[in-house]
Image (cartoon, rainbow, N blue to C red; front, side):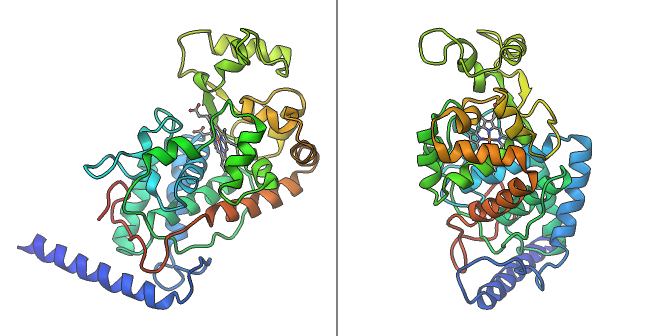
Length: 331
Ligand code: HEM
């Protein structure tokens, strides 16, 4: 009896806080002060969980940054990536670019559980992802930017779109530009956001083709620096070892800096999609790689701008979507 009363109260409080959010947001866009009155502690809570998670596992910063990207590129930043399989839809977690690769779901679950205690039915899972991406960058030594907020959560996942919209690591430069353009992002955004690969790792399956059969002629990618190529071969054999990992930025794998771009100039980008920003014969992306390699402040500035732009891809606002109580399932 007590527990069913509790459920009714929770439902009522959800309905009330959602009505408040709707009436108080009289335009469709996002804005940084969205939780100023409804949950002013939100960012402090998120930050404290991240500090702990990243201190335990520095790679977690990279994994959370990537989660926001994989969310936004699939039907917008709506936390669709966090939904588990259900009878209604197949989870995006099962899609090629995500399977055995995306991580950080448990950290998001912990943050969400705490936020539901403190501010029930208020902070969306999509906004938690946007906050977590920004705070992960800051905790890794990268730039701070204000995160526009007010996204709501989708009521379904988009498995097929996750397979189609997220670029593959062997993509050529034209494919990368096309997939980013489809999201309203240009070459500047592509190069700056690829700089996220200044932290984190990739599995052998993501770069094997470059080592052994780049263009179907059983030869390696000629743009790979020789010593780096030899080191990578020892991590990633011709077969087996699919899940062996290598840092995306061998110079400073846990530090958010511009060394990723410096490494591209040396032929030490890990993924094909990294190196082609320089070798893909597109003047604009080549120039940007050189600028960011030379000047970290310019990279940080553009990265922040591009993260806001990516974070604004097709958000659900006002009456669309919902505030999920558990990021893994619809209410
Ligand atoms: C330009 C097109 C991109 C391609 C083709 C690409 C592809 C990949 C691949 C294949 C991995 C390794 C996955 C694995 O082997 O398990 C990876 C890791 C990563 N990606 Fe990207 N990515 C791209 C853009 C981005 C963007 C825009 C961001 C964020 C803004 C991002 C953030 C990351 C991070 C931080 C990691 C490391 C994750 C970890 O260590 O858990 N990537 N990416």
